[in-house]
Length: 230
Ligand code: NI
Image 1 (cartoon, rainbow, N blue to C red):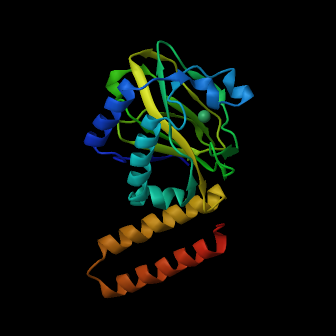
Image 2: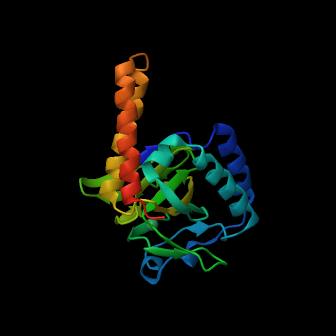
């Protein structure tokens, strides 16, 4: 399941991010690639743990911790410190799969990558190409979102980034381990949570419907209790 999370960052936060990213030093993106993906990866990245990456990573993680749609969709347990990449001048990233396990740099802490995220810092009109292509069970999806928006997709999927033929595509990307390992269960909980919230909104002045919403919320939390791995 691919889920677009709109407005993770405000236009002011995107502008602040762009100031920092435009002034930052970029290095060859193959530093974080596995052996296989290094052969198809052609882009630049901010060095992991650089001051720019840390500052913007913190801004992103704070924004996500307050984003109800993200929390409902990802049910995150651990989030990898956000990385940043840039594609220009025909650069692309061929079809690959992300590593299942990522060690957080400078620690012994490892994250199982259940979900991948790409957060866009450049508006689509600033560059041509650069679509994130994700192979889903329903076919290949093409993703190119406004600045400040983020796509959440299964880390289990094959994906690639199409060549950027004009301008620059600047994004943050990272992975997360979900409290719910199984994608089917996670998707079911997401649908249920969204349905309950809509019900509660639509029928807020109906006491009987409210009681139903409370009962369904109980079922949601009890399923979460059954399935959570923390
Ligand atoms: Ni990837």
